[in-house]
Amino acid sequence: MIEPAELLHVLGGIARGRHLQQFGSTRAQLSVAARAGTINRVRQGVYALATTDPKVVAAAAHGGSLTCADALRAHGVWVLPSVDAIVHVWLGGSGRRHPHTPCECIPHHSPGTAGVGLAPVASALVHAYRCLDQEAFFAAYESAWNLRLLSAHDRKRIRRELPKSAHRLLDLARPDAESGLESILRLRLHLLGIHLDCQVVIEGVGRVDFVAARRVIIEVDGRLNHEGPEMRHKDLTRDAAASRLGFETLRFDYAMIMHDWDAVARAVIAAIARARGRADDVSHKRRSRKQMHAQIAHLGMHL
Image 1 (tube, helix red, strand yellow):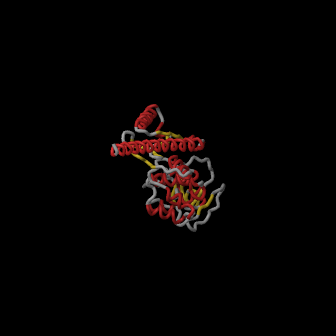
Image 2 (image 1 turned 120 degrees about the vertical axis):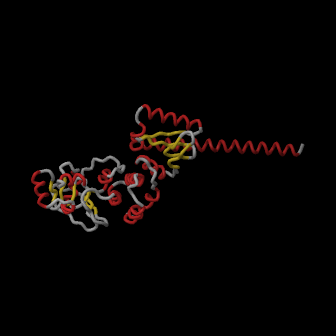
């Protein structure tokens, strides 16, 4: 016989009693385990391990599942760091609150039936739109899509449940953003009227995060993929190869994007101006050469 604590571990640390009973745990066994302290009784009919995330336990005590940013983070979705101690709870379409102490929970009602544990990614994103700023939501949405946590059905559902004012963000979103920093940078530059080509493969350089004005490479250096002397050397080698091909490379890290955005925007705008200036200069020289050849040909006809 599998002990209730072992079942809870397999089921994610929290479950309803009737779910545990489907796997063979009787009410008597659950009561014995709760009295022995191997599992905790959250409220009537809900049990958890002592090691279960306290926010998940609080959400279950409130009557639903943990949602919003905390649930997205638990699912592995990229979410901006937060010290928010408030518990966001999905209660389904018509779930009711269960009084508990202490309680500073924020309830979210949306279609569906809420269980205990974590709200599904699609539901958590709908709720996150209500609580996060737009760029934080956008980054989380692209991250979930990139991680293949959103099906086409999920994306349609999110569009249906969010207000029409959110559709411009959904239309801009792409499934190839590999970090939330990339999403935030692209959204901010889009609002400045700057178009970026994303995840571009340049022969002799490799794949780069963005290209602007056909000649400006923009790389977002997250800590995971750009730390250490070896990775730094690789980045410098790529930048040198790009320079030989006529590209200018700009690199921005988390601190610059999140805390010194004005410097980032000014650098991008200046680099694009230089790239367009070089393009105009090349075009002018080509036109001059064509005009010169035409003049020579014209003179030859009259000699």
